[in-house]
Amino acid sequence: MRQHEYLVAVKAENDLLTCHTLHWDDETRDPHKEIDSLPGKAKASQKELAMARQLMDALAMEWKPEEFHDTFQEKVAALITAKQAGETVEKAEPPAKATGAVDLMEALRASVGKAKSPKASGEKAAAPGVKQAKKAAPAKKRTHAEPKKTELEGLTKAELYEKATAAGIPGRSTMSRDELQKALTRDRTRQKA
Image (cartoon, rainbow, N blue to C red; front, side):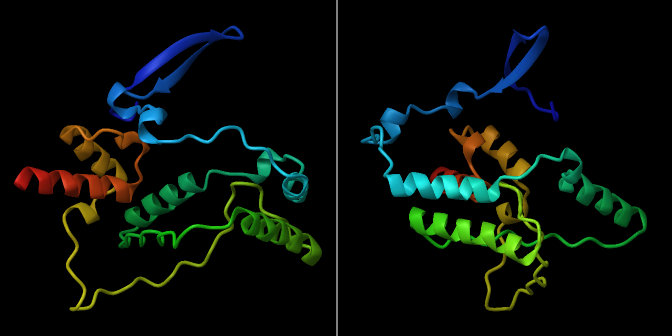
């Protein structure tokens, strides 16, 4: 698939053969070795359960599959059309990095508030996991004071993954683009030393 070899498990389910992709051995980790003290079962308070139910009720909607579409495919089609027309296409800026830890109860309260507000204004609430479209930020120009980008910064996640595979970096399948870049940088620094 996608010009790569994958480890798979094929099994029979409901008169069909299903194929599940698996992780390679070097990509799996034992949680007991990685985390010193795994938490036991936590008991949620009645207030937390009530807030969770309220959030689920606020986000619940009738499922209409025709209202959802593959935005990635649409963007690729638009890119192909632009290329065919001879237009130049600029690379998008990477998303902003997370700024720190969030209080779970505050995040739940904010989610409940956001889920309620569109209904009050007559707009549709976004389905869970579906992001609302945002206006694209203007492209940032590099000033002379900013450092020049390294070779790895210009690569896509797929290209970084291929380099990580060649370098034998463990856990690469679960890494984000930034984590792959950092791991490859560490690996190169270690090889130079």
